[in-house]
Image (tube, rainbow, N blue to C red; front, top):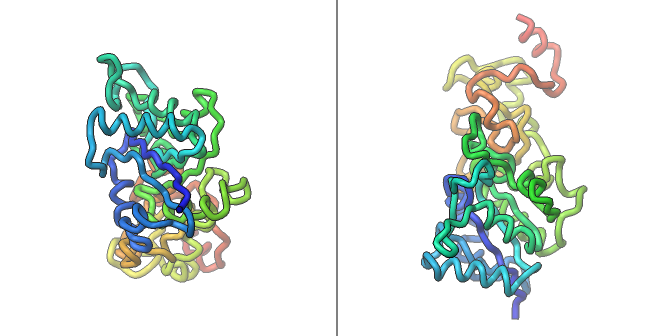
Length: 294
């Protein structure tokens, strides 16, 4: 019999877009991911995911709490969204106890302390994202900060993106099942797997030659590098140019739009369609330098 790895999916302050992205996984399909063995001899058993599960209310929450108790120290916790910690007003709650709403912060602490490992799925969970954007009235923080706030030390992997590519989540889970929890050398400074976030968008962008030649598009639809139109590719780490989205159909720059840097901690602090000027760009030829000097 295959070894069962329980997975609990905790939705926090987010839009469920990360769940929708995961449902679009193509190889393996979402059916294979949920039913079959991800790697030979190991099956990931999704015990709780309120966005897609048929159960609701006390029945569903009972499954969550039973898994956390029965499989203490054995389950993986996937968190989708930022954790509101600003007040006890209950901006984000899940269920009740003795007539009192249980906040997501409470649920997170209860589940995190006994988890084998935690996956922060999406930029909201990894870096705060949109819910933590100024003025942040609900006091949202990323998973990493929420763990520190409550004095919890747990293996954490950030799978950023708004939303993340389904391959990034599936590949991370498969890697953990095959090789165990990632070492420090497997993750970057932001705790993202280097296998998916190891290189800049800029390094593999099909418009990179335009950048090196100093040919920049001045308006959308033109040939040329999209840097002047606000492309964040030079500061964004992800393998989108090689992987593409929607089963390899296309990706944002292929559709004529600049990269918005959705995998980065700075995602919500940078203007989308304005040129980034305060960054150290990769070394370029004299043609580019003279072009920008003009």
